[in-house]
Image 1 (cartoon, rainbow, N blue to C red):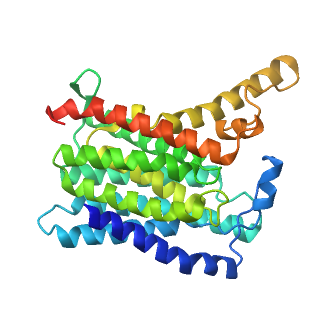
Image 2: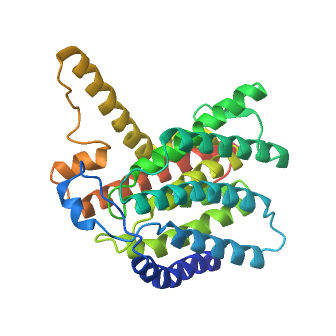
Length: 332
């Protein structure tokens, strides 16, 4: 597995050295929200759409894996990668609109949601057709499997995929944080895949880890490039697709606590603000700013500290998830 990892890392680094100057040349700079932390304004113009860097790295790592493991089943790798790539294209369209309009408003929320729902349903149907997914919901803590009606499972799965993708997207907002948080998630899924005998899915995970490490060299604070919605939607799609390809979507709960908390903090902020505005004629806030990483920034945390704490917490979640989940087949 070291070769797909190294291939993903090397391809990402080499591509970044070519791609970042290109983004600067075409003025593909990130517009910054005026309502955000004032110190973020100095980042205005930093190249965005850098997600293509780890997408190229992941593709290269997967190719090396396939070449070195000709007997491995590569259908799940293709299914996961193509699905994540569809989400990357949605994000790319969104990024392009933001750049051309020179604002933080890209695709409309309704259009983005429709595209995400269609892609999610297509993945579920594809995985069912390929035989990697059953309408049986595995409960990791209880070590039981609950059979669900086909339609009910498809609705549940579509909701989980779209929710995961958007939770991952919301977590992006501080230099390197989404990259750092996602590395342990990808590594955990890869380890579980190998432990359960799903070598192809494990190969995808290890290639993604390599690509993300390469991207982090340029995304760590102060970031030389942002991943944009191109990258964050790809990562959300890859994580959700991997969970379902392993037929273990509830692994997302312990593994992705940071993503979950980030989106919950945003929801809590909006609900409380609207409630208090209606009741007291003045909107009040639970957090200084949402999502939660911005609250920490406004509380005096540096971006490097947020990166370190979030990444360490994600490592703990990944280790706990692996410990909880490996019992599914009675082996570590």
